[in-house]
Length: 196
Image (cartoon, rainbow, N blue to C red; front, top):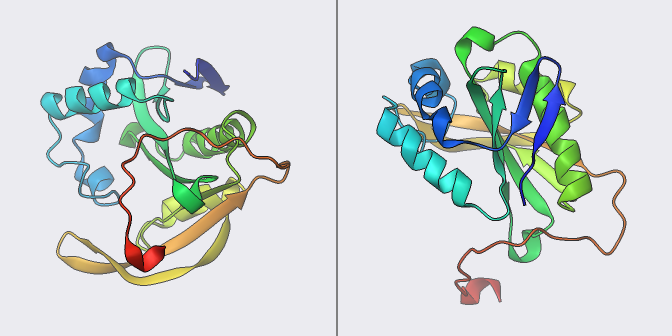
């Protein structure tokens, strides 16, 4: 399943393409972006990193990582990480936007649009995000997009040599009805006797 194109003002959310590698490598190679993301997002960010990411994103089924793009190039990324087992109707939201495009409401529009897609097309019941408390801009994006602050997760992250707190924001599917349609996942199921 592909997303096609979702219009968000002058920009779109669309599936990733191989020719997005150059713009990803250009814009993602920014410490101001890296500092707010998990360490799986490398810095410095190279063309090889962009190509590896695109192979992963384009090989997903269903696709849940998407480009935020202008008419000319990809300018950011937004994605859902679906849960499994008892969390199968929940997805974690992640995103980044190229610095030249900050402050224009693009990410707020993208978060709103992808949330609606997740609720209406993927059967997701709850979407959550965990920005670091040092990332006030991301917290504002989530609040403007209808997410509620559920709490603060203390000393949850070790990033760039520091322990950081995280916010826990979530948005519920107000139109959900049973039975939900969970998106299929291909995660390995390791049984832990502590949780049986």
